[in-house]
Length: 62
Length: 179
Image (tube, rainbow over all chains, first blue to last red; front, side):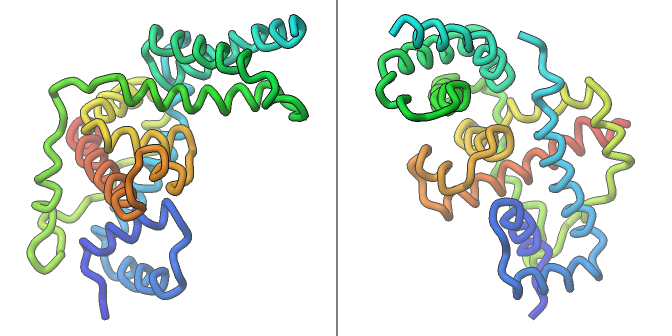
């Protein structure tokens, strides 16, 4: 069964915190292949992680 | 004993820098480091046998930082996360599907972007911000976050999800939408 976009956003977030099972990854991939909105969303979530990892470099020096 | 004390004291500058990066409140950072040094001196016995003093001290400091984050109260400009559900129609489709952000990596080179990001982070509700910062900034695993915040794993996933959704909205509105 196809996942809804809302379910996909939950899976994408989960995927940043633990390894998804193969079936979830397959469902995710199938959905992203046909959905631009969720593809953009997924990229933005990974970007968010990258931005946070670099936040410390940009903080005011003590 | 005195040797241990001076080695611990020698790490103060490093610890202060570490704490300042995480907390951005100089007083809170200073307090966290002070508490760490005191805890370290009181706990010399538990250091015995470990090889790296700095790693051990940083481990203590991380917990002091979390305590400090807990204590720092948030301002009243907290985002209302009730409208996250409004992002989706009843069938689970996007009401307004996310558009691509233009050249996000270029933003990572801009100081102003990080200022916008921090402003967004500050507007997250406290518990959500705690969970998110522990995960993304301090690099904790979700199991550790659940334990620290005394919440169930499911609640933990939900907090992280809400943090990410809210930050995405905030950045889109305050940064990517304005470029």
